[in-house]
Length: 356
Image 1 (cartoon, one colour):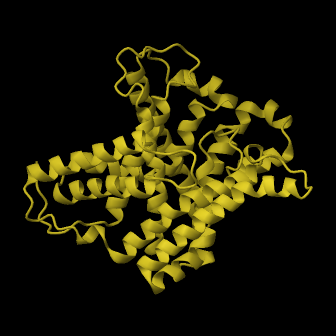
Image 2: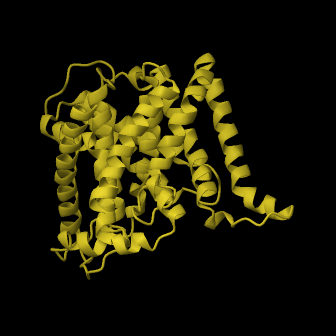
Image 3: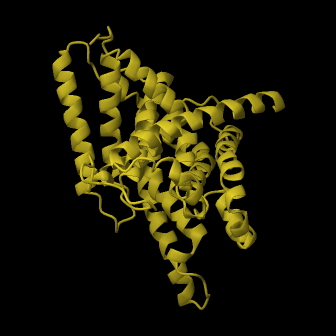
């Protein structure tokens, strides 16, 4: 176990890939161990995370945090920068949607209302990709962060807290829009049936974690952590405890009836444990694996949805249910999704470079 000779935590581009790599693995553990969405009967008798896979939903907060954290390092922090990153995400998502999804359910597509299809293009409706919500959230974040970042830059801590309070209050207001409109005579769909309003609500409710990520990058909170004088064993123990605590808190104490994501507290804890470990130790092979996974995390996000989305899982799911043991199914799904995503990204990057 080789120790790196650094005194403080390092959070560079490579570390970002490691965090994203572990976050996407958490997401796949969440969805694959969830116990629903399988057409074939599977054996759960020896399930490693049976019944507690919900703790891995901390991945949502981790990705939201990293959106804000990464935004701090953008050169311009304007709408043009946001548009460039929105295009990259849409290329990834639309590749999965138009090449690997819609052709395999074209009959259903032809019978689907055009508005629903348009909603699916941006994740507002998830009928053709169950886990596409990140598309509309990322677009929202890239549109508002130019203004939010300038506000936070003036007085970082105070203005971050103000932004958090405002987004929570706005999310409450947005949630009540259908009810308020009905009171004054406007007939609109209820909140649960109003896809655009629901998308705006969830975007606002996840923004506090994103702006917290921006604050952490702005103030260099992670980089202030000194690890040079802490023995290796204690680093491992403390980080393991921090990971377990963050997962346990997310699982046992995540209220669902309030417009505030408690991953605001839990996600930074998990990320801190990850960056401390990989700043302290080299772990060359594990580091390389997580970095590669992180580099294709967006493609893995959208691709693994193919195995569970009703419209196309009839075609894709048999590829992962070749095993009956749920643990083997999960492991094989992660491996298969990684290599498929790596291949798709390589082709897409090659095409984009030649048409750009």
